[in-house]
Image 1 (cartoon, rainbow, N blue to C red):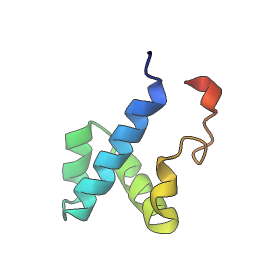
Image 2: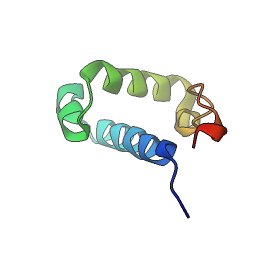
Image 3: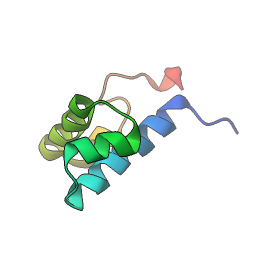
Length: 67
């Protein structure tokens, strides 16, 4: 079974959320996941507003057909 590209996006977002909850600052998380600090902050802010729903690709406007 082939994994969709959204699986890796969800994994990265979950890692950002978990690392943030452990108290790591955004710059350190960005280095860990090889992302821009603004991306890390966007994911954290979205999680704070919407909870785990941010891990749903459709929430970010991605179609399940893109997988």
